[in-house]
Length: 202
Ligand SMILES: [Mn+2]
Image (cartoon, rainbow, N blue to C red; front, side, top):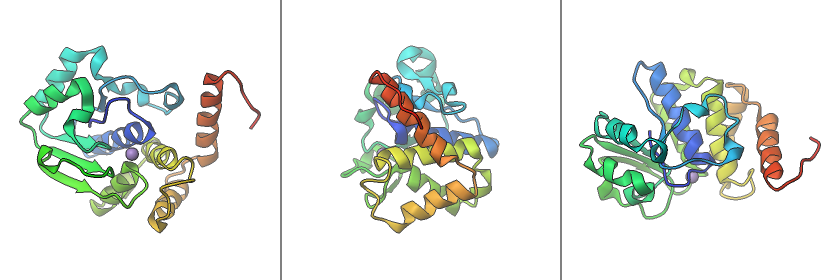
């Protein structure tokens, strides 16, 4: 499971969630990002298992080159993975794109699910999980990852959210999978503000 250089909430949330679900199906799944991710995402339970390519490039490149499949989440061209791109290109594993950015370079990928009229990659991933009949595999940590992806890519539901599906999926995550939406928003707001030097009361 890979994502782009300078990973954001959608990148981290989607690759983390897909890794959890694939492990539930008995696969070995390694979530990997090219470089470190922001402090405000580090509270997500279990996210510290993320492999960071630039911190261990030999082992990370080996994992990519020996993978059976490489999922490419939240980026539209392999060059967006920065230092990781050579190892991805060297790998003969089929590359599966799941992404919502404009103008994907489809020749980079063996299979693709590219849709721009959506909030986020996390939303597309939820739809794919649903089509696979894997909704029951979304545990609270995976749901939190998907929720973080949708929430951050919409600026807490202030843009890129004119689609009913975004709210239907958010509702499904909130109700069925017990995402604690208020505390998720609170954690990230507090950590972001702490980074700016102040805290606020909830
Ligand atoms: Mn995104």
